Image (cartoon, helix red, strand yellow):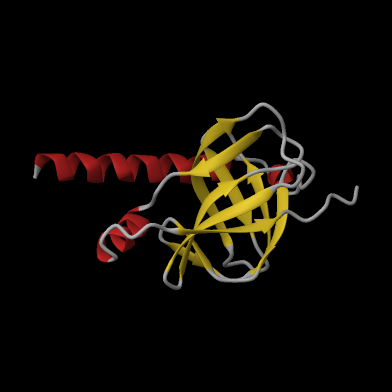
Length: 151
């Protein structure tokens, strides 16, 4: 019981910190698509507890641990907790990778052709629940290529 209360409080603190960080970020940072990855996602997917519709999304790194996703409408914006994964060199084609369980897609990793660092999403409570429900069935990885930078 004590552990669950501590987890609940920690989760609340992280959510508050994320909200404050986004509120304090100048709006000009949201317009920076040159440092982000853009991709057309042909299916609805989840980031944490949010289900986002299919559409064209821009994935922009906000800081070491947070990525901003901006989609086609006002209700298709989300923050993702991420961990950096540094490789030797940037891939030739950036990819947005999803874990697929049945008809549920969860954002897994974002890589860019302009960076050797990929960003891996932490596993959400919702994804863990589906893994348990499916008795630890392995996810199918689904990748979508980034759109070419036309600048």
